[in-house]
Amino acid sequence: MIRLLTLLLVSLVLSACGINNIPTNDEKVKSSWAQVQNQYQRRADLIPNLVATVKGYAAQEKETLTAVVEARSKVSSMQVSGDVLNNPEALQKFEAAQSQLGSALKRLMVVVERYPDLKSNQNFLALQSQLEGTENRIAVARRDYIAAVETYNTEIRTFPGKIWHSLMYSDMPIRDTYQATTEGADAAPAVAF
Image (cartoon, one colour):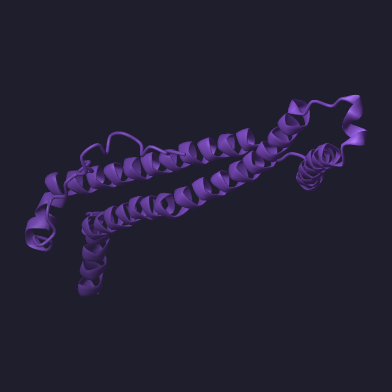
């Protein structure tokens, strides 16, 4: 009976003494760092795709609007006089310019009908929002990692964790907090179009 009570008492003392705090906090540090890397990977995957999408929409709108502007310019630059009807070559040029303008306008209308809200500035605003959100996610992941390192380092430097660290976990070193190692890492990446 005394042995059972002693075993029970030792179990209670050991379970409340923090012997598992060091490996638990070490795992928290590792998972927090994995989350930082996850957010970096998300940025690396997401941003180029978003930029390409925005460029594509901007190019589509630019191409269509450029065609309309050029066609309109051709039509307005033509001098139309009463004798155009008597000159088949001039009439053909005038009709070709009008047809080109009509074709460009039809393309523009098709784009507008298919995508009534298609505007490059909205895509740029969405890209800006995604960039900001991505940078915020990275900042949060870094903050969580720094907090996990702080908890871990505090545990192995204070009582009773310091005792357990020296007796059982001496192979677990004090961890460094997050440090930007890339030159210019304190600035967000530039997005150029």
